[in-house]
Length: 258
Image 1 (cartoon, helix red, strand yellow):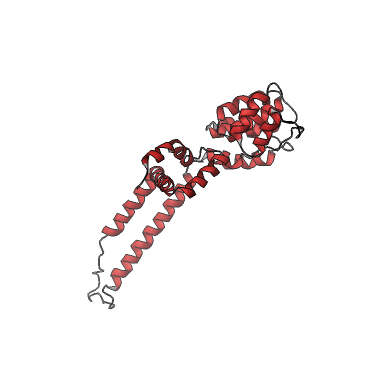
Image 2 (cartoon, helix red, strand yellow):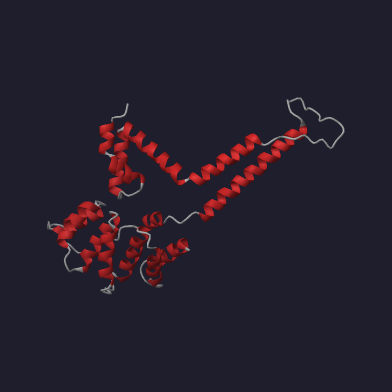
């Protein structure tokens, strides 16, 4: 029997997991919890099935209609011949079997064409594309590891993928120095806080820093994709020229957005 009080306590986390709104650290922690808690895992699987049905209603309706056609297709014998149909001993006539085979083959072909048509015309999942390309940028900050300070602790958390913790340190450490602010923006992005990431990355991009210029445009484009501002993302991707950092990634992503 499900413990509904326990499930209710995880309601927000379940929704975030199903909608792929958790960062890498949070997702790993939640999946570890699912391995330990069968009732919670069962609830998540149930919710995922409901989401699948909701997002694939049209395809499911089509499949059900075609199944109904198969079940209710009348089988007609070929009466153009004067001789009665020959029974092959298996309970059906040769012409009936041929008709059944033709109907099944035709419907399978129709289902296949519908599937590939739907695949070809399925809207691009921009959030998934952004997640695919959103990789942490290497740490270029020179900091004495023997010294304990907000910036050092923030970068340790960033490199470990603990973006919530990184944000708490970097928000205090990052002032007017664009490099710490850049890593704060990336922590926001990795933590699905896209509005904050966009605000910071826009301000950094305007500085025309030779080191951070292309990276800031690249990550800003990914942040725009996360919130489905696709045209702004494409403009930024097109602005990354050959020879600049992330040029090949930008070119590859643009092809997938066409």
